Picture 1 (cartoon, rainbow, N blue to C red):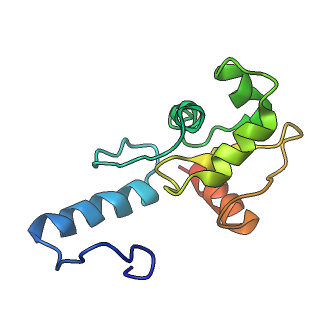
Picture 2: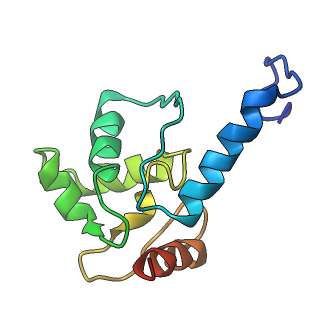
Length: 126
């Protein structure tokens, strides 16, 4: 953690941290539920717009990159949508794994296509 955030002052977790971790784990196990944790989502205005659409995709559903581009009102921004998805550092909470190619194939994913496929399959089973 210190390597990733070299200027941060790491502190021992307090009592509320266990509850926070429990909520995150429960959300991963049951992604159909809303997660209510404080997030510091940093990104450009464009990324924020894309990520907002992604957070509206229900577990078990998918959209294509083209559909996301249309939803943000910029149908020509398909590649930029893909880049915004790849820039997402909050896997699962901002469910970029729910964005697939327009052919229906599982495409690139920051944490690997295999993990993306596993997440999609787990959500279909719920």
